[in-house]
Length: 482
Ligand code: ARG
Ligand code: ZN
Image 1 (cartoon, rainbow, N blue to C red):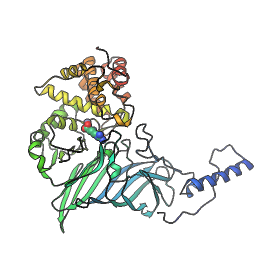
Image 2: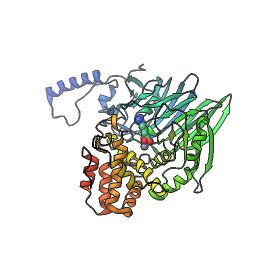
Image 3: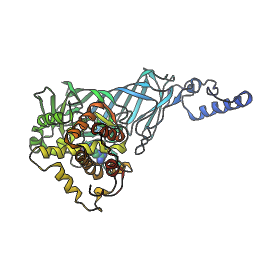
Image 4: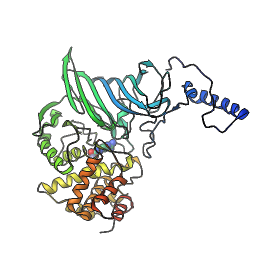
């Protein structure tokens, strides 16, 4: 697995060491030994470069993401054979070191790695669980831009999440349903698999003629030659790895522009087409309505992928182009499109804050009903508020799911939406919608935390909201009637 080993060189105590004389030499020897034993890139010990951390330390998913660098762009060149379920990949990753880096990790699960290059030179690599450990021939200096190329292949293995759901590259009878929240990106490409590190993407996906490969963003070209079709897609705005897709299937494709000029690309499994048609027809209307409520649409393209993959059991807000495991109803499309503002453009910094995604998208469904002749959001609130204290809805407070097993449970979605209804009641409609739009604008293409959202709510409304948020977001049990 290891290519040419770098030459060993003498180590010395780290700068700032208080040790002198004999003690320093002994320490130096110990350090040299430790460097020899602990690191594969021993040249690093000479420069003071350290390995990047194997994870970002998220309390729920400690190994997702990596330390020591940030990614600017992923260039993914994929080939998929639906019959053999076989994937070949070449990932070109443009990154920047944020520390002197002796080695760094990418997240990759399953598959077989063929070679790894850093800046065009063969790099040492090894694998340990979901970590692909890369040791460049020379340490990378803090601030340096670098490019990693990883060639890999194999039959992707889907991930099973702590809640039991399938995640990642999920093979279907005619291709693959490719979703990645929260972990699955690592089942089909190497990445810094954490929403903290967003990047732009380009995709080149080759499939047998007759199949369609649908990714995020704008379709640049589609060419068929020698019985195979290559689709090139481009996602220019920053995207979290979990929102990337390269879904493959036999799809009917629908393309048009909305009145406001957004290109829409819908790919629909013919077996779901009749069921999906009514909700898909509403996409331009939903886009306009959400733009009025939440502010400018954050992306250059829109659409939907409707697969026939009922075993998956969920839809995902894949950036620009949500992915449905069956024909969705209108509420589900409203939900996934609302995520484009809340979750996709404004990203999580910690999985514990998932209510900022799911509570908001659920509340968007309530607002849609309210403004389209259905029940008011208050009526939805009242309906859930009538559930007894023993109901699972009250199992934990919205902003404290406790572990990765509960990030998609009803206290995140429904109680999260109820929290927003309580906020709306406390500050009034005008301030409430100002808060939503300001949140989307100030954190556009970036990140947000629960603390930032509660602070913004107080800033816009001029009210003390500590008790409301503490009760709804952080206090166990069913909140008392307010
Ligand atoms: N974010 C998706 C939605 O609510 C749900 C994803 C569920 N994923 C999972 N691995 N259980 O729209
Ligand atoms: Zn959602």
